[in-house]
Length: 263
Image (cartoon, rainbow, N blue to C red; front, side, top):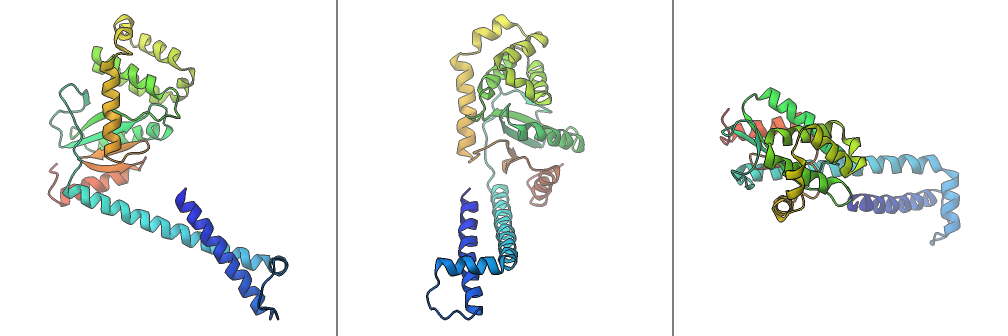
């Protein structure tokens, strides 16, 4: 939002300069430019102004994208040298081999559409590096997603009974994310379909055990400066957003080139 505001200010300033130039080129006798003169100049040659503004917008966006790309490159280089260290305990349920050389930690929100899209990217990575990746799923439920927190609680409660059923719960939600609009009724229905012991689930669902686990994930995500979802750590290198497969491959290649990863 801040970048857009800065671009708008730049464009408005440029518009004023262009209008002044148009008036000067029209040999205005007055050293002061009135509002009426500005409007007349715009009426006389609007296409000229619009063309320059469009180019200014394109240049501003290109410059912003270049700066953003450089910032990401710098962040990756720094993290390769000093990787972030997420907490992964023995109680954490993990997909993939425990000793896999690539660890991907995901900070996710069950209602986030970008998280749903990223699932396909992670699956593609697993296909490309079979047996080389372990996935750790952590929670970052966003406040404007009303069912994200309760979905996270169900996931954690189910994981206490069966990691396999928790993974299936995870996959089913992201495959049919729109069903979450039904709220907890859908979560309970899905749990029953997976043959989860609902009596045991309801006993732990709203306990401090579940709440503290989710809050610890949120605190860790905040510590690593993940403000939205999805966020990932690839062997400690942050990926902030739903980047394509090629971005993850680039990080893996850089880890290898820097002697931080052997496959």
